Every structure is written in structure tokens, then in C-alpha cells.
Image 1 (cartoon, rainbow, N blue to C red):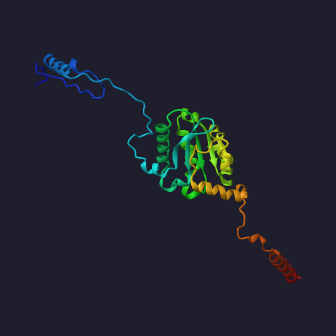
Image 2: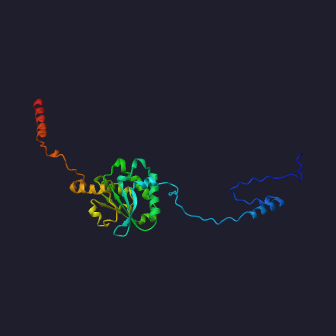
Image 3: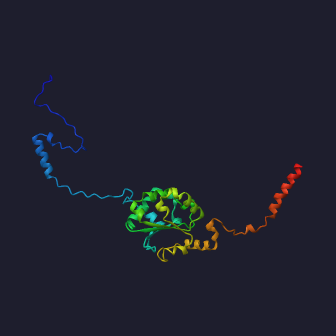
Length: 260
């Protein structure tokens, strides 16, 4: 040993496998010929085909349960401007059991598989929607819209909001300007009655659920509901208020007599 070198001395080179460095120059002549012969015997690799696939659209995810609910579907018809119709029935959407992330993936899946190109509109039916049961929330809706590709936003031409309540109008009018982008905010068209929908969409171009038609008939008999004023079906307002007024004034006079 004694620090002297012999012909049997060797060196070790450690190479990371992910650096892509050709290690053949460090091999002996015999090892190099063996490695080259093995490399030539391998079949030529096939040409790589690269496809840009959206990360939000997993091909293997099953949406059959959401499809069964029919709360978001593409109709066969179009509006009078030629825009295909996506129908949304708020009452059919079970907000407490569907996460916002899955809702977004489902919306993206429907648009990209059923309407990959061309202009479209949305007909949203707000009839008998309950906030706790059917409303995903304005924040989630804004998030889904913001995540849409820019070309998809441009293809969305109009949102027909059927049977909007007073609260919905106020929320969108006040908070919508801040939570919704200008493009979406100005595309919303309120439709208080189905008869006004036929000005933009011909009858038969979209299927109207029976409960939506029934709700429309009720609103025809209760027009003040649009302004947040509910009629009194038990006619309680017809009870004379003199007894109550008399009681208040009688109590006031009794107080004065006690103080005097």
C-alpha cells in the first residue's frame, strides 16, 4: 500500500440518473462496445404525441349521479339569436351534498364535451329555490365563471334568470358588481314571467318543468310578490286595529293619571 499507485487503481464516477449525461466515455473499450451493441439492438422509440389536456377535466371521473339529477343539461333548441341553450333548474341542485370543486368539474365537463364550440346561453330557473337546499352561493358561482377559459366566457352570450325573487335582485344589483365580472354582470337578463321568455326563446325550444309553470301561474295571481309584498291569504289585515290603538292610548292616559 504505502501510497504508491499500481495498474489496478480505479476511479468511481457517480452520475445522477436524471441528468441525462452520456456515461459511455468513462467506460473501457470492451464495455463501450458491449453497451453500443445493446443500444443498437433496442427498438426505435415511437414518436411522442403531446396533447394539451385541461387539468380540470379528469376523463375517468364519473358524473352519472349529477347527470341523473338533470339540474344542468344542454337543450336541443336555441334562442332567437341562434345560441344553444344550457338549462339550469335550481330546485334540482342539492347544494349541501355537492362540493363546489365537483360542481366546477361537472360544469366544465358538460361544456367541453357537449358544446365544445359555438355561442350558447344559459336559462336559469330560480323557481321555488331554497337558499339552504339549492343555492351554491354567489362566491362559488363567481369562482366557476372565473375559472372558465376566456374563449368560453366569450361564447356565453346571455343568462336568462327566470323568476328572480326580490332578494336575488338586490344581491346581484348590490354585490354583483363587485363579485361578478362586468362581462357576466351585463349578460344577466331577468325574466319575471315565462311569457317574457318567449320574446327571446320560442316555445318548444326548451323544456319547462311542470312545477316552474305552476309557480308562474301562482305569480300571475300574486303580482306583488315580485316586489317582496306577500298578500294576506287569511285576511288578517282586515281585523280592525281600533282595539289595539285604544289599548295603547288607554295605557298612556293611565300612566298620566298615576304620575299626576
